Length: 318
Image (tube, rainbow, N blue to C red; front, side, top):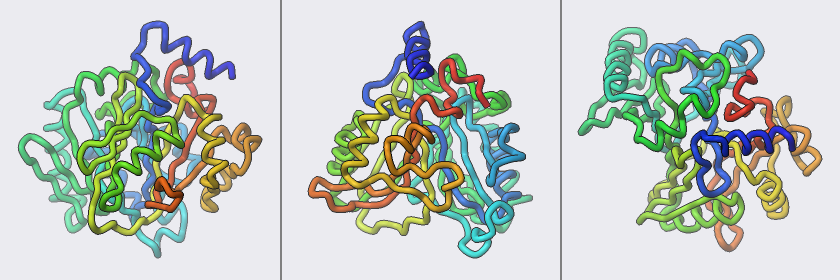
């Protein structure tokens, strides 16, 4: 309880304001990759992320810092052998990364175009500028949008709110948005799910469900309706929330709490006692109002007492 209390006292002392709802931080996206060398070239040399020096020797994946708070986790075949057969995981929508200035976006574009014509030539990588928005496809087929941060994004992702140790060399400010498809007609139900089960602030705009959070309201999760849902390949996103016990109990009562057998060395939460031990839990089913499964997407949900929490007074922990 003490780290949580210290965090909220810290945030009330002049740093960026907390957004409405429980979502404090979209912290990382985990994607298996067919080649770690290609991932290193794309994420570090291209996007301008920096490798987490504290995870390099002990993790089964490449951890790249995206600004002071966020990361990409990309396991390759040398980390887990099954990836050589199954290949890369494909995020079904796109990921939005933001930079301090448009100049930095242009610099990233130049680096990425150079890689596309040299080290990453022959891969799925493309770089396109559409009306001032940089659209990038990575070597494995995942799609990104790179742009200048808005004022709220720059405020919420600023290092004044805490910095993960070892992230000082990152050029992007962070992950501003994760965008996924949802079945046709399901946007309202998806928004209701996040509001009812996860205590998050949501809204519906046409065929889109938008879940808001982060410091100063700097991050969103979005679900865009589509008539044809792509296959889910097992990627996941990790988030920190402020109302952990309430959210966990709702998910447990609904039968949503799930253990990923791939990560039992990290967490194996089935009960509240387990949640306190591991300081997190997972679920992957998004439910409709009648309890049916609308779609699957693994969520790794953490409390602020988790040792990797990068905000506030916990920012110095590697």
